[in-house]
Length: 155
Image (cartoon, rainbow, N blue to C red; front, side):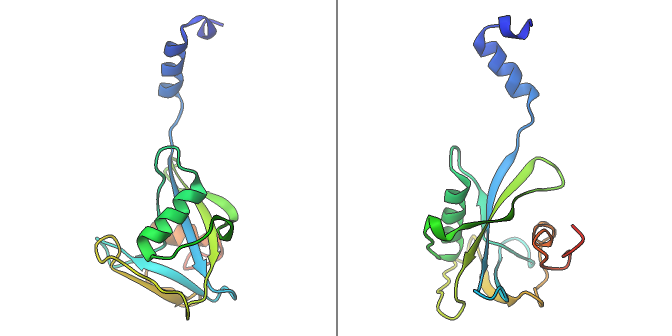
């Protein structure tokens, strides 16, 4: 093949141009033990609710990104072994270029202290899973994969 006769830097450049790239993020579904309440966030600029989530830093493992974003957005500290991969563990969004790694975390709403900074996150609250607030479209689609929210069973 001609490709393999090219210099390595040229081959690397061709592969990078021709290979699709993905934006990777991590999301945490923080729920109580009985899975009756879900922690949701309200973030600028909208009034709709979302989940603790964010993009991964370069070379950051998804579980580390989930832990970091959870702490940054809610003040909740979690050990890595407390973050359990959800099933499915990754959700590819409609554009096909955005993939969320999803983790579950169990916390007691009565004893878990939530701290929001008012800039990145305006509000955080526990919501009964059968009465979730108006949420972003991306959040509704993601939750639908876990049989939660308005799109449960249709994703």
